[in-house]
Length: 177
View 1 (cartoon, rainbow, N blue to C red):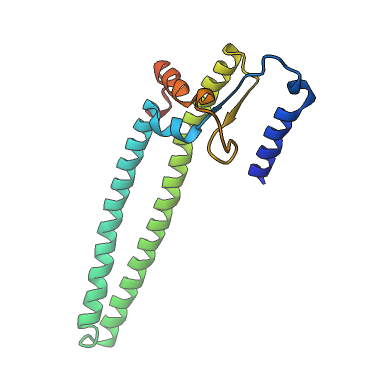
View 2 (view 1 turned 120 degrees about the horizontal axis):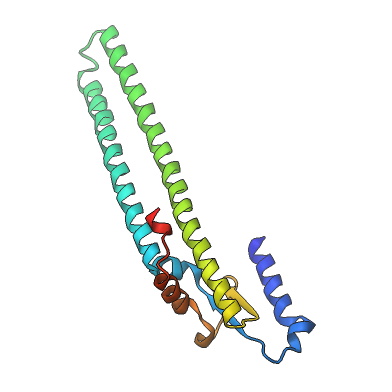
């Protein structure tokens, strides 16, 4: 739906009578994903996110080993134990397995939220830079060039590298937060 709306908007802008008669029509596009990945703030955010993922993986690995240890113990000693002891061990195993699964799911959600927050802040700062470039450069329109909105764009109107340089030179701080 969003892609279709973007196509319609872009086509409408380019074909509108107001723009068709404009003598100084100036169009550019920016690959926001590239700008996010290659800007200094984007790289810092990616590195911090990787550290967070590693930390969570280590914590989950410890829990996983505990669960596997209980499972092995249950499989090896289960038949030799009294019913009461086996039941207690099975109960302990199920509880630790549920805790592990819950922690895994919570960790995944937490990482998704952190990723959205970090990238959201950087994307907002990039949009501000793009807006300022559009105003200062007298652009009629600057599109998002992520191969879904701009299917083809001449390299001459690709503003991505300029946006990255401008963004980095302004010392944007979203990744530092």
